[in-house]
Image (cartoon, rainbow, N blue to C red):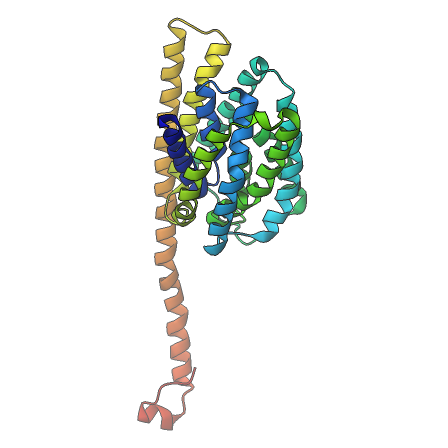
Length: 327
């Protein structure tokens, strides 16, 4: 019972992160299950089965808060489902010994990518421009495949790619990716069911993760409006990197003083990424404040000029009585 309560708490925290950042439910949950000794295929299968419920709840909540671009959802969901089914089939056929370092490598790489990506400012200068289907289709296919084979990766691949494009509001990127993930999780679960059978799913674990995720989904859809993605992305990336480094070092049989030295190096990189993320967030907020303060001043000059011009054109009888100038 204590283990199930811990898993429910993990599901809650993972969904809070995922719903407010657009990623990391699968990364966080799969990483914990691997550390607990669960076989990679069973861990990914269980997480994806739980995600069917959590992503449905998250999608509905994001839709109600206006965070979903349905055109983007339809363009990435179907390719994502195809990639996820193929990835689940592949992972089901790999032995546990071979799959563990493979899965940890994917998670480690995605965590490092989060650190690097969120240490830099996020682009928002092209918001409103149309995203092409030839970009969204391959993105969904790759993200779905990585998601199923790594136990997580749909959000870490799709969300940063859409944020980097600068063509969507961050909240709509997160809401659209979370909503499309419902289809991806369903396709991955079908692939694992075919490859592993029903015994491949750890149903108590699925239930615990699902309950925690369902509780957190509505709150996460609201938090996406106020939580700075810059800091959250860097923080989650560091946790994923450090946790999966343990599995990789064990697979490489790395012992002695090299192991703590590598941990210290990774921790230093995480700290540097957090510092850079804070600086990037401050620069972005400063730029927005300067733009907001400059807009009224720029608008005031033409307004005064137009008022002066219109005052010159006012008929004498209106100007004498003080009647407001027609606009």
